[in-house]
Image (spheres, rainbow, N blue to C red):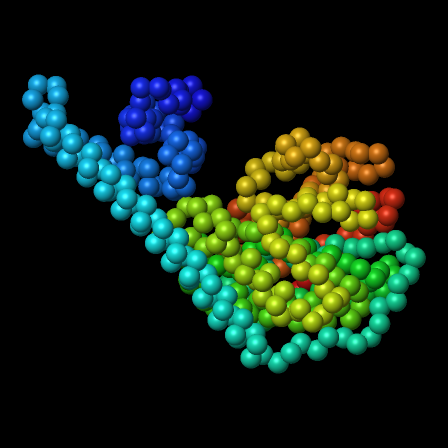
Length: 405
């Protein structure tokens, strides 16, 4: 869009400017999100791109009729113009009212969901916080435990050419794998003499409902996916807190995003169930002072004993090597390790160095293992997790590649 004149001219009214932008730019070159941002800035509002596009579509629809009915020569009758302007102002007021009502409905819906879940949590039996004491030691080490692409609520089997079962997944298998991961984690905690870990959820915790054809592979509805995953994770973190103190961090994924009314990816960026899972964990685990739960964001940046970690789900990363360089340049930050999930298999590459530490990206395996999506991409790998050990003054010491049955 940069080759077109996007600046409003002095003689242009706001509506003239709106129409010119849509008329000047060919539809195949139209960046509707950028155009919406430009118009919102000019009008001083915050409408979606679909609102601006629909307004222009109405103009195109009725323009020939108005001209043919009321035009004398090349000019409209002044009284007709006045009537149209009055109607336009009424439509603008009506549109603003509709947008306000829509915002109120969305806020009310969200608050209602939170209130009902909070009431449900209150009715649950309290989680029994471990009473044993975690002794501090001088071993300046910690770990990051990856949990990626759980797709909780999905179920299915992958069959071979002779109908043999190559892979199977459901809620029960997820729970079994998580308890198996806990056993591996406890063993590594004792071996490395750790007193603190970070549990990093790289998202797609639930299977969600991005496409209607997912329904044939789902064991639970979306609401049940959220509540059951959050409750199980509460129990799992509480059990782990018997051995170490925990930071729980998470990012927003694509499968946990709500897409209302056939909306596109990113249109309701904040309507992401990962945020609700985090809120549930905070509420459920509020009495356990050994667990710190951080808010879920699209991209998170944090420090682990001097190692700078950047993490995101990965659905928007086309090239991880380019992405890590771009993020470092855009945000003027050091990044030693860039962690993602999304593609359901392990991928690790060093792209440079920063003193003694490397600069690398690390894509984590999934908890669900092979599914229909990964099979379609011909990208298969065992279900699993990565447990990465960090040492102060050294950085990443080693990584345990945990494969789960």
